[in-house]
Amino acid sequence: MSNKKINRLKIVILSVIIIALLFSILFWYSHRNIYSLKTFEEMGIHQIEITNDENQTLIFIAKIADDVDEQEAGFQYINQTTIENTIILFIFKSDIYGDFHMQSATKTYSPNEEFRYAIEARADFFKDNKISANNSSLIIGSLP
Image (cartoon, rainbow, N blue to C red; front, side):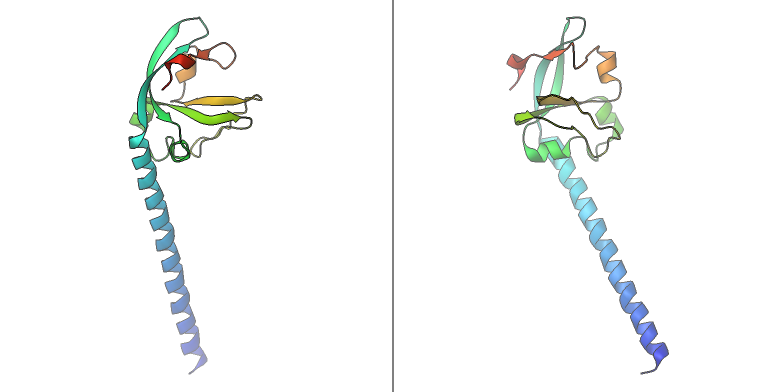
């Protein structure tokens, strides 16, 4: 076989490998997307109460993420309208010390203290409702 034919064969084989790799990545990404959406839809819904910075008790309907799959899903791959109208309360099995970061968020939250609960909500949710980490509290008796 001539060198030209061998080089063409190498190019064809390399092209097939690259295409197969791209399809594998697309399949993995779309499967993860569908899994996250399904997990988000299956999260329980519960009424929660928060005392804000002005000592007002606020009532919200929240999706509850209390297992690892739900916590990993969060708002991943969820449309903006749903994010604007939904909050997620993360309930961890035990206290956590460290950063809280969602994959689609650009900011990592570092409370510098242990926490068992975290809320994921639209931008300005906390500001609009006068909720801060230092002066507000989740009313534990309102949890599922």
